[in-house]
Image (cartoon, rainbow, N blue to C red):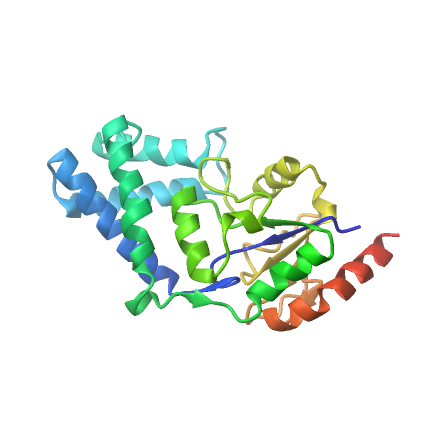
Length: 245
């Protein structure tokens, strides 16, 4: 029986040019950190990429949160301690005051049609609604992107961030940690996402995915646009419950 619906964010609830957003984010963060560390912004580009790749690695053996691993990788590469209170305050200001202004131009951020209705359908059905976005950013960055999508933190029982996750998608450990925090089993969760690689787990863990992307993955239990999912969600949840029974 489905008890929780987990939504991806980027290109699921929010339409945006993610590459352009990442480029703007890293460029702005590099300039700030370079001014604080008295180094060149160009020198921070490769360390940032290395830190993102470290978080995303599917063969990780550590037990660090993604944030701690990111900070550790930056420290080893540049000598800059991101958890130093002064630098941490600088980055918090950047993410809370500057990043929310990145939605225009080439980033072109806007809500996905039907996203708001799908979230309301989950609440109307009495199910747990959660945001299982790939946890490579802080909550402040997630809040900025949520606002562009026309949703907010209060819509969700849990939002995954780099500070409350120790793995990234499609690691089963990421999804298991998320379900544990919600107090449900993975087989009681329905994932809604657009990425046939990251939002569909194929190791028999029991997580099922409603796919709202442009491919045709055979492992999805439902495929189509978000607008149609909003209408068909109650019937989909009922059908999955009958299959479980």
